[in-house]
Length: 210
Length: 210
DNA sequence: GTACATTTCAAACACTCGTTTAAATTTGTG
DNA sequence: CACAAATTTAAACGAGTGTTTGAAATGTAC
Image 1 (tube, each protein chain N blue to C red):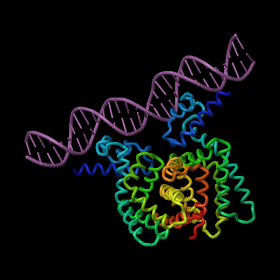
Image 2: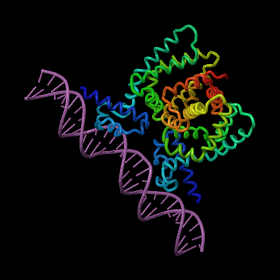
Image 3: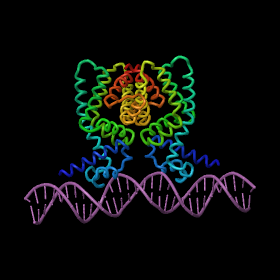
Protein backbone atom coordinates (compact mmCIF):
# COMPACT_ATOMS: atom_id res chain seq x y z
CA UNK A 1 0.00 0.00 0.00
CA UNK A 2 2.77 2.43 0.82
CA UNK A 3 4.58 1.55 -2.38
CA UNK A 4 1.44 2.13 -4.46
CA UNK A 5 0.97 5.58 -2.98
CA UNK A 6 4.62 6.14 -3.51
CA UNK A 7 4.55 5.18 -7.16
CA UNK A 8 1.48 7.26 -7.98
CA UNK A 9 2.92 10.26 -6.17
CA UNK A 10 6.30 9.90 -7.84
CA UNK A 11 4.61 9.78 -11.24
CA UNK A 12 2.48 12.84 -10.50
CA UNK A 13 5.49 14.80 -9.26
CA UNK A 14 7.64 14.01 -12.26
CA UNK A 15 4.76 14.51 -14.69
CA UNK A 16 3.80 17.93 -13.38
CA UNK A 17 7.37 19.16 -13.58
CA UNK A 18 7.95 17.88 -17.11
CA UNK A 19 4.50 18.94 -18.33
CA UNK A 20 5.00 22.49 -17.14
CA UNK A 21 8.49 22.66 -18.64
CA UNK A 22 7.85 21.03 -22.00
CA UNK A 23 4.10 20.86 -22.48
CA UNK A 24 1.76 17.90 -22.39
CA UNK A 25 2.20 16.34 -25.78
CA UNK A 26 5.92 17.01 -26.00
CA UNK A 27 6.50 15.10 -22.77
CA UNK A 28 6.73 11.35 -23.20
CA UNK A 29 5.72 8.74 -20.67
CA UNK A 30 9.25 7.39 -20.87
CA UNK A 31 10.64 10.72 -19.71
CA UNK A 32 8.16 10.78 -16.86
CA UNK A 33 8.73 7.23 -15.66
CA UNK A 34 12.45 7.64 -16.04
CA UNK A 35 12.52 10.77 -13.86
CA UNK A 36 10.13 9.15 -11.37
CA UNK A 37 12.28 5.99 -11.34
CA UNK A 38 9.30 3.72 -11.90
CA UNK A 39 8.42 1.28 -14.63
CA UNK A 40 6.97 2.57 -17.90
CA UNK A 41 3.83 0.47 -17.63
CA UNK A 42 2.93 1.80 -14.19
CA UNK A 43 1.42 4.96 -15.69
CA UNK A 44 -1.17 2.93 -17.55
CA UNK A 45 -1.64 0.66 -14.55
CA UNK A 46 -2.32 3.46 -12.06
CA UNK A 47 -3.89 6.14 -14.26
CA UNK A 48 -5.21 4.27 -17.29
CA UNK A 49 -3.82 6.51 -19.99
CA UNK A 50 -1.70 9.58 -20.57
CA UNK A 51 -4.86 11.67 -20.95
CA UNK A 52 -6.07 10.65 -17.52
CA UNK A 53 -2.63 11.32 -16.08
CA UNK A 54 -2.80 14.90 -17.38
CA UNK A 55 -6.19 15.38 -15.75
CA UNK A 56 -4.94 13.89 -12.49
CA UNK A 57 -1.99 16.27 -12.44
CA UNK A 58 -4.28 19.27 -12.88
CA UNK A 59 -6.87 17.91 -10.50
CA UNK A 60 -4.34 17.82 -7.67
CA UNK A 61 -4.15 21.63 -7.90
CA UNK A 62 -7.74 22.39 -8.79
CA UNK A 63 -9.08 20.38 -5.86
CA UNK A 64 -7.20 22.74 -3.54
CA UNK A 65 -7.68 25.96 -5.47
CA UNK A 66 -11.25 26.03 -6.71
CA UNK A 67 -13.09 25.52 -3.40
CA UNK A 68 -11.04 28.36 -1.92
CA UNK A 69 -11.81 30.61 -4.88
CA UNK A 70 -15.47 29.75 -4.72
CA UNK A 71 -15.56 30.68 -1.05
CA UNK A 72 -13.80 34.01 -1.58
CA UNK A 73 -16.12 34.90 -4.45
CA UNK A 74 -19.21 34.12 -2.40
CA UNK A 75 -17.83 36.25 0.43
CA UNK A 76 -17.32 39.23 -1.87
CA UNK A 77 -20.72 38.77 -3.48
CA UNK A 78 -22.34 38.87 -0.04
CA UNK A 79 -21.14 42.42 0.63
CA UNK A 80 -23.74 45.07 -0.05
CA UNK A 81 -21.71 47.50 -2.13
CA UNK A 82 -19.68 46.65 -5.27
CA UNK A 83 -16.03 45.78 -4.69
CA UNK A 84 -13.06 47.62 -6.15
CA UNK A 85 -11.68 45.93 -9.26
CA UNK A 86 -8.12 45.53 -7.89
CA UNK A 87 -9.69 43.89 -4.83
CA UNK A 88 -11.55 41.42 -7.00
CA UNK A 89 -8.42 40.62 -8.97
CA UNK A 90 -6.35 40.27 -5.82
CA UNK A 91 -8.89 37.90 -4.31
CA UNK A 92 -8.68 35.86 -7.48
CA UNK A 93 -4.92 35.77 -7.40
CA UNK A 94 -4.19 35.26 -3.73
CA UNK A 95 -5.44 31.68 -3.54
CA UNK A 96 -3.13 31.03 -6.46
CA UNK A 97 -0.20 32.11 -4.33
CA UNK A 98 -1.49 29.95 -1.50
CA UNK A 99 -0.68 26.93 -3.63
CA UNK A 100 2.97 27.49 -2.81
CA UNK A 101 2.29 26.54 0.79
CA UNK A 102 0.71 23.28 -0.31
CA UNK A 103 3.27 22.27 -2.85
CA UNK A 104 6.72 23.35 -3.80
CA UNK A 105 6.58 25.72 -6.79
CA UNK A 106 2.84 25.23 -6.70
CA UNK A 107 1.71 28.46 -8.33
CA UNK A 108 4.35 28.49 -11.02
CA UNK A 109 3.73 24.95 -12.04
CA UNK A 110 -0.03 25.18 -11.88
CA UNK A 111 -0.25 28.33 -13.98
CA UNK A 112 2.19 26.94 -16.49
CA UNK A 113 0.09 23.81 -16.63
CA UNK A 114 -3.03 25.92 -17.10
CA UNK A 115 -1.37 27.79 -19.94
CA UNK A 116 -0.30 24.53 -21.51
CA UNK A 117 -3.85 23.33 -21.21
CA UNK A 118 -5.02 26.13 -23.44
CA UNK A 119 -2.21 26.13 -25.97
CA UNK A 120 -1.42 22.42 -26.12
CA UNK A 121 -4.50 20.24 -25.98
CA UNK A 122 -7.63 22.29 -25.98
CA UNK A 123 -10.23 19.59 -26.26
CA UNK A 124 -10.67 17.39 -23.25
CA UNK A 125 -9.11 19.79 -20.75
CA UNK A 126 -11.42 22.71 -21.47
CA UNK A 127 -14.42 20.43 -21.16
CA UNK A 128 -13.03 18.98 -17.95
CA UNK A 129 -12.59 22.46 -16.46
CA UNK A 130 -15.91 23.96 -17.50
CA UNK A 131 -17.79 20.89 -16.40
CA UNK A 132 -16.32 20.89 -12.91
CA UNK A 133 -15.74 24.58 -12.19
CA UNK A 134 -17.96 26.63 -14.51
CA UNK A 135 -20.18 27.84 -11.66
CA UNK A 136 -17.25 29.31 -9.77
CA UNK A 137 -16.10 31.19 -12.84
CA UNK A 138 -19.56 32.72 -13.26
CA UNK A 139 -19.29 34.24 -9.80
CA UNK A 140 -16.05 35.92 -10.78
CA UNK A 141 -17.56 37.47 -13.90
CA UNK A 142 -20.44 38.80 -11.82
CA UNK A 143 -18.01 40.41 -9.39
CA UNK A 144 -16.16 42.18 -12.18
CA UNK A 145 -19.44 43.45 -13.64
CA UNK A 146 -20.37 44.89 -10.26
CA UNK A 147 -16.99 46.65 -10.03
CA UNK A 148 -17.36 48.25 -13.45
CA UNK A 149 -21.00 49.30 -13.69
CA UNK A 150 -20.19 51.83 -16.41
CA UNK A 151 -19.10 49.06 -18.82
CA UNK A 152 -21.60 47.07 -20.87
CA UNK A 153 -21.51 43.34 -20.29
CA UNK A 154 -20.25 42.69 -23.79
CA UNK A 155 -17.26 44.96 -23.25
CA UNK A 156 -16.42 43.16 -20.02
CA UNK A 157 -16.67 39.87 -21.84
CA UNK A 158 -14.03 40.95 -24.34
CA UNK A 159 -11.75 42.51 -21.77
CA UNK A 160 -11.84 39.46 -19.52
CA UNK A 161 -10.83 37.33 -22.46
CA UNK A 162 -8.06 39.78 -23.30
CA UNK A 163 -6.92 39.37 -19.70
CA UNK A 164 -7.14 35.61 -19.85
CA UNK A 165 -4.82 35.78 -22.83
CA UNK A 166 -2.29 37.75 -20.86
CA UNK A 167 -2.38 35.36 -17.92
CA UNK A 168 -2.23 32.18 -19.95
CA UNK A 169 0.42 33.41 -22.32
CA UNK A 170 2.59 34.85 -19.59
CA UNK A 171 2.49 31.69 -17.55
CA UNK A 172 3.05 29.38 -20.48
CA UNK A 173 6.21 31.27 -21.45
CA UNK A 174 7.10 31.99 -17.86
CA UNK A 175 10.53 30.40 -17.89
CA UNK A 176 11.54 31.98 -21.18
CA UNK A 177 10.40 35.43 -20.02
CA UNK A 178 12.31 35.13 -16.78
CA UNK A 179 15.43 34.21 -18.71
CA UNK A 180 15.09 37.21 -21.02
CA UNK A 181 14.42 39.54 -18.09
CA UNK A 182 17.49 38.20 -16.34
CA UNK A 183 19.65 38.66 -19.42
CA UNK A 184 18.36 42.10 -20.45
CA UNK A 185 17.78 43.81 -17.11
CA UNK A 186 19.79 41.79 -14.59
CA UNK A 187 16.48 41.10 -12.91
CA UNK A 188 15.77 38.10 -10.78
CA UNK A 189 12.02 37.67 -10.96
CA UNK A 190 9.99 35.13 -9.07
CA UNK A 191 6.45 34.17 -9.90
CA UNK A 192 5.09 36.39 -7.15
CA UNK A 193 6.82 39.34 -8.75
CA UNK A 194 5.29 38.61 -12.12
CA UNK A 195 1.82 38.35 -10.62
CA UNK A 196 2.23 41.57 -8.66
CA UNK A 197 3.14 43.28 -11.91
CA UNK A 198 0.14 41.69 -13.55
CA UNK A 199 -2.55 43.11 -11.24
CA UNK A 200 -2.23 46.84 -12.00
CA UNK A 201 -1.80 46.07 -15.67
CA UNK A 202 -4.97 43.98 -15.84
CA UNK A 203 -6.99 46.32 -13.62
CA UNK A 204 -6.14 49.33 -15.80
CA UNK A 205 -6.96 47.46 -18.99
CA UNK A 206 -10.27 46.06 -17.79
CA UNK A 207 -11.42 49.43 -16.42
CA UNK A 208 -10.14 51.45 -19.38
CA UNK A 209 -12.42 54.26 -20.60
CA UNK A 210 -14.45 53.33 -23.67
CA UNK B 1 10.26 25.82 -63.24
CA UNK B 2 6.57 26.57 -62.90
CA UNK B 3 5.96 23.23 -61.24
CA UNK B 4 8.70 23.87 -58.72
CA UNK B 5 7.14 27.21 -57.73
CA UNK B 6 3.82 25.49 -57.61
CA UNK B 7 4.98 22.72 -55.30
CA UNK B 8 6.74 25.06 -52.90
CA UNK B 9 3.71 27.34 -52.77
CA UNK B 10 1.30 24.46 -52.26
CA UNK B 11 3.42 23.18 -49.39
CA UNK B 12 3.61 26.62 -47.78
CA UNK B 13 -0.15 27.13 -48.08
CA UNK B 14 -1.04 23.79 -46.55
CA UNK B 15 1.62 24.10 -43.87
CA UNK B 16 0.53 27.53 -42.70
CA UNK B 17 -3.07 26.43 -42.38
CA UNK B 18 -2.26 23.24 -40.49
CA UNK B 19 0.39 24.89 -38.33
CA UNK B 20 -2.00 27.63 -37.21
CA UNK B 21 -4.75 25.12 -36.51
CA UNK B 22 -2.79 22.39 -34.77
CA UNK B 23 0.59 23.81 -33.87
CA UNK B 24 4.01 23.14 -35.32
CA UNK B 25 5.04 19.90 -33.68
CA UNK B 26 1.56 18.38 -33.73
CA UNK B 27 1.39 18.81 -37.50
CA UNK B 28 3.12 16.05 -39.44
CA UNK B 29 4.76 16.38 -42.81
CA UNK B 30 2.44 13.68 -44.08
CA UNK B 31 -0.60 15.80 -43.22
CA UNK B 32 0.96 18.76 -45.00
CA UNK B 33 1.99 16.94 -48.16
CA UNK B 34 -1.33 15.14 -48.26
CA UNK B 35 -3.30 18.39 -48.09
CA UNK B 36 -0.95 20.02 -50.60
CA UNK B 37 -1.24 16.98 -52.87
CA UNK B 38 2.51 16.64 -53.28
CA UNK B 39 4.96 13.91 -52.46
CA UNK B 40 6.17 13.50 -48.90
CA UNK B 41 9.83 13.84 -49.83
CA UNK B 42 9.32 17.17 -51.55
CA UNK B 43 9.36 19.03 -48.24
CA UNK B 44 12.89 17.89 -47.57
CA UNK B 45 13.85 18.47 -51.18
CA UNK B 46 12.60 22.06 -51.34
CA UNK B 47 13.05 23.23 -47.76
CA UNK B 48 15.64 20.88 -46.29
CA UNK B 49 13.86 20.00 -43.07
CA UNK B 50 10.67 20.58 -41.14
CA UNK B 51 12.43 23.20 -39.06
CA UNK B 52 13.31 25.21 -42.15
CA UNK B 53 9.77 24.81 -43.46
CA UNK B 54 8.42 26.39 -40.28
CA UNK B 55 10.78 29.31 -40.72
CA UNK B 56 9.79 29.69 -44.38
CA UNK B 57 6.11 29.79 -43.48
CA UNK B 58 6.72 32.59 -40.99
CA UNK B 59 9.13 34.34 -43.32
CA UNK B 60 6.44 34.75 -45.96
CA UNK B 61 4.48 36.96 -43.56
CA UNK B 62 7.41 38.65 -41.91
CA UNK B 63 8.91 39.70 -45.23
CA UNK B 64 5.73 41.70 -45.92
CA UNK B 65 5.04 42.92 -42.42
CA UNK B 66 8.37 43.90 -40.94
CA UNK B 67 9.62 46.37 -43.58
CA UNK B 68 6.30 48.20 -43.33
CA UNK B 69 6.51 48.26 -39.54
CA UNK B 70 10.10 49.44 -39.67
CA UNK B 71 9.14 52.33 -41.91
CA UNK B 72 6.25 53.41 -39.71
CA UNK B 73 8.41 53.26 -36.61
CA UNK B 74 11.14 55.33 -38.20
CA UNK B 75 8.56 57.89 -39.24
CA UNK B 76 7.24 58.21 -35.70
CA UNK B 77 10.74 58.35 -34.23
CA UNK B 78 11.60 61.23 -36.53
CA UNK B 79 8.99 63.51 -34.93
CA UNK B 80 10.42 65.82 -32.30
CA UNK B 81 7.99 65.23 -29.44
CA UNK B 82 7.00 61.84 -27.97
CA UNK B 83 3.95 60.20 -29.57
CA UNK B 84 0.78 59.27 -27.74
CA UNK B 85 0.70 55.63 -26.74
CA UNK B 86 -2.55 54.83 -28.57
CA UNK B 87 -0.96 56.29 -31.71
CA UNK B 88 2.06 54.04 -31.34
CA UNK B 89 -0.14 50.99 -30.83
CA UNK B 90 -2.35 51.86 -33.78
CA UNK B 91 0.68 52.20 -36.03
CA UNK B 92 1.84 48.80 -34.85
CA UNK B 93 -1.50 47.16 -35.45
CA UNK B 94 -2.49 48.66 -38.77
CA UNK B 95 0.17 46.87 -40.86
CA UNK B 96 -1.09 43.67 -39.25
CA UNK B 97 -4.50 44.33 -40.74
CA UNK B 98 -2.84 45.05 -44.08
CA UNK B 99 -1.84 41.39 -44.21
CA UNK B 100 -5.44 40.55 -45.01
CA UNK B 101 -5.10 42.33 -48.32
CA UNK B 102 -2.06 40.27 -49.21
CA UNK B 103 -3.32 36.89 -48.13
CA UNK B 104 -6.66 35.45 -47.21
CA UNK B 105 -7.03 35.34 -43.42
CA UNK B 106 -3.55 36.81 -43.26
CA UNK B 107 -3.73 38.50 -39.89
CA UNK B 108 -5.51 35.70 -38.11
CA UNK B 109 -3.20 33.03 -39.41
CA UNK B 110 -0.04 35.01 -38.86
CA UNK B 111 -0.88 35.85 -35.26
CA UNK B 112 -1.84 32.28 -34.58
CA UNK B 113 1.48 31.21 -36.03
CA UNK B 114 3.24 33.77 -33.87
CA UNK B 115 1.52 32.40 -30.81
CA UNK B 116 2.50 28.88 -31.75
CA UNK B 117 6.06 30.06 -32.14
CA UNK B 118 6.11 31.09 -28.52
CA UNK B 119 4.31 28.17 -26.97
CA UNK B 120 5.43 25.33 -29.23
CA UNK B 121 9.06 25.50 -30.23
CA UNK B 122 10.87 28.20 -28.36
CA UNK B 123 14.42 27.62 -29.52
CA UNK B 124 15.19 28.21 -33.15
CA UNK B 125 12.21 30.48 -33.88
CA UNK B 126 13.07 33.06 -31.27
CA UNK B 127 16.64 33.16 -32.53
CA UNK B 128 15.43 33.42 -36.11
CA UNK B 129 13.13 36.32 -35.29
CA UNK B 130 15.56 38.28 -33.16
CA UNK B 131 18.35 37.78 -35.63
CA UNK B 132 16.37 39.12 -38.58
CA UNK B 133 14.02 41.65 -37.01
CA UNK B 134 15.48 42.60 -33.64
CA UNK B 135 16.33 46.12 -34.84
CA UNK B 136 12.75 46.84 -35.86
CA UNK B 137 11.42 45.62 -32.56
CA UNK B 138 13.87 47.84 -30.71
CA UNK B 139 12.40 50.87 -32.46
CA UNK B 140 8.95 49.94 -31.24
CA UNK B 141 10.13 49.51 -27.68
CA UNK B 142 11.84 52.89 -27.89
CA UNK B 143 8.63 54.50 -29.10
CA UNK B 144 6.68 53.05 -26.19
CA UNK B 145 9.37 54.19 -23.75
CA UNK B 146 9.12 57.72 -25.14
CA UNK B 147 5.34 57.65 -24.70
CA UNK B 148 5.65 56.47 -21.11
CA UNK B 149 8.68 58.30 -19.70
CA UNK B 150 7.52 57.65 -16.15
CA UNK B 151 7.93 53.85 -16.53
CA UNK B 152 11.26 52.05 -16.08
CA UNK B 153 12.42 50.01 -19.05
CA UNK B 154 12.00 46.70 -17.23
CA UNK B 155 8.36 47.49 -16.46
CA UNK B 156 7.74 48.27 -20.11
CA UNK B 157 9.36 44.98 -21.07
CA UNK B 158 6.91 43.04 -18.93
CA UNK B 159 3.88 45.02 -19.98
CA UNK B 160 4.69 44.61 -23.65
CA UNK B 161 4.89 40.88 -23.16
CA UNK B 162 1.61 40.93 -21.28
CA UNK B 163 0.17 42.74 -24.30
CA UNK B 164 1.67 40.27 -26.72
CA UNK B 165 -0.12 37.56 -24.79
CA UNK B 166 -3.43 39.33 -25.21
CA UNK B 167 -2.93 39.80 -28.93
CA UNK B 168 -1.76 36.30 -29.64
CA UNK B 169 -4.37 34.62 -27.48
CA UNK B 170 -7.20 36.73 -28.82
CA UNK B 171 -6.28 36.02 -32.41
CA UNK B 172 -5.72 32.35 -31.74
CA UNK B 173 -9.21 31.95 -30.28
CA UNK B 174 -10.67 34.57 -32.59
CA UNK B 175 -13.26 32.31 -34.17
CA UNK B 176 -14.53 30.87 -30.89
CA UNK B 177 -14.74 34.31 -29.27
CA UNK B 178 -16.72 35.78 -32.13
CA UNK B 179 -19.20 32.91 -31.88
CA UNK B 180 -19.68 33.38 -28.14
CA UNK B 181 -20.09 37.14 -28.53
CA UNK B 182 -22.68 36.60 -31.23
CA UNK B 183 -24.61 34.09 -29.13
CA UNK B 184 -24.46 35.94 -25.80
CA UNK B 185 -24.72 39.58 -26.88
CA UNK B 186 -26.21 39.50 -30.37
CA UNK B 187 -23.00 41.11 -31.54
CA UNK B 188 -21.57 40.77 -35.01
CA UNK B 189 -17.86 41.41 -34.66
CA UNK B 190 -15.27 41.41 -37.40
CA UNK B 191 -11.54 41.16 -36.86
CA UNK B 192 -11.17 44.91 -37.28
CA UNK B 193 -13.72 45.44 -34.52
CA UNK B 194 -11.83 43.17 -32.15
CA UNK B 195 -8.60 45.00 -32.78
CA UNK B 196 -10.26 48.38 -32.29
CA UNK B 197 -11.41 47.12 -28.91
CA UNK B 198 -7.89 45.98 -28.16
CA UNK B 199 -6.21 49.36 -28.51
CA UNK B 200 -7.78 51.20 -25.53
CA UNK B 201 -7.44 48.05 -23.42
CA UNK B 202 -3.75 47.66 -24.20
CA UNK B 203 -3.01 51.38 -23.93
CA UNK B 204 -4.55 51.55 -20.47
CA UNK B 205 -2.68 48.46 -19.30
CA UNK B 206 0.71 49.54 -20.61
CA UNK B 207 0.39 53.04 -19.18
CA UNK B 208 -1.07 51.89 -15.86
CA UNK B 209 0.28 53.65 -12.73
CA UNK B 210 2.91 51.68 -10.89
C1' DG C 1 17.00 14.34 -80.50
C1' DT C 2 20.45 13.73 -77.47
C1' DA C 3 22.56 15.14 -73.06
C1' DC C 4 22.14 17.22 -68.79
C1' DA C 5 19.93 19.10 -64.68
C1' DT C 6 15.82 19.47 -61.99
C1' DT C 7 12.00 17.58 -59.89
C1' DT C 8 8.87 13.80 -58.53
C1' DC C 9 7.95 9.44 -56.64
C1' DA C 10 7.49 4.99 -53.96
C1' DA C 11 9.90 2.61 -50.71
C1' DA C 12 12.48 1.98 -46.93
C1' DC C 13 15.18 3.57 -42.82
C1' DA C 14 15.87 4.30 -38.00
C1' DC C 15 13.51 6.08 -34.30
C1' DT C 16 9.91 7.43 -30.78
C1' DC C 17 5.43 7.14 -29.22
C1' DG C 18 1.39 5.18 -26.02
C1' DT C 19 -0.32 0.90 -24.90
C1' DT C 20 -0.65 -4.11 -23.95
C1' DT C 21 0.85 -8.56 -22.40
C1' DA C 22 2.21 -12.14 -19.42
C1' DA C 23 5.42 -13.56 -16.21
C1' DA C 24 7.80 -12.33 -11.87
C1' DT C 25 7.65 -10.15 -7.63
C1' DT C 26 5.81 -7.99 -3.58
C1' DT C 27 2.14 -7.35 -0.38
C1' DG C 28 -1.84 -8.28 2.52
C1' DT C 29 -4.64 -11.82 4.79
C1' DG C 30 -6.60 -16.08 6.78
C1' DC D 1 3.21 -20.82 6.12
C1' DA D 2 0.12 -20.60 2.20
C1' DC D 3 -2.89 -18.60 -0.79
C1' DA D 4 -4.60 -14.69 -3.35
C1' DA D 5 -4.60 -10.09 -4.66
C1' DA D 6 -1.98 -6.09 -5.97
C1' DT D 7 1.95 -4.31 -8.02
C1' DT D 8 6.20 -4.22 -10.70
C1' DT D 9 8.82 -5.67 -14.52
C1' DA D 10 10.85 -6.59 -19.26
C1' DA D 11 9.50 -7.21 -23.70
C1' DA D 12 6.94 -6.60 -27.55
C1' DC D 13 3.18 -4.45 -30.44
C1' DG D 14 1.37 -1.47 -33.93
C1' DA D 15 1.29 2.98 -35.43
C1' DG D 16 3.35 7.32 -36.42
C1' DT D 17 7.40 10.45 -36.95
C1' DG D 18 11.22 13.04 -39.95
C1' DT D 19 14.54 11.87 -43.19
C1' DT D 20 17.12 9.39 -46.93
C1' DT D 21 17.64 6.81 -51.14
C1' DG D 22 17.83 5.67 -55.95
C1' DA D 23 15.23 5.14 -59.78
C1' DA D 24 11.65 7.26 -62.75
C1' DA D 25 9.75 11.34 -64.87
C1' DT D 26 9.96 15.96 -66.42
C1' DG D 27 11.99 20.12 -68.06
C1' DT D 28 15.90 22.78 -70.31
C1' DA D 29 19.53 23.76 -73.55
C1' DC D 30 22.42 22.62 -77.33
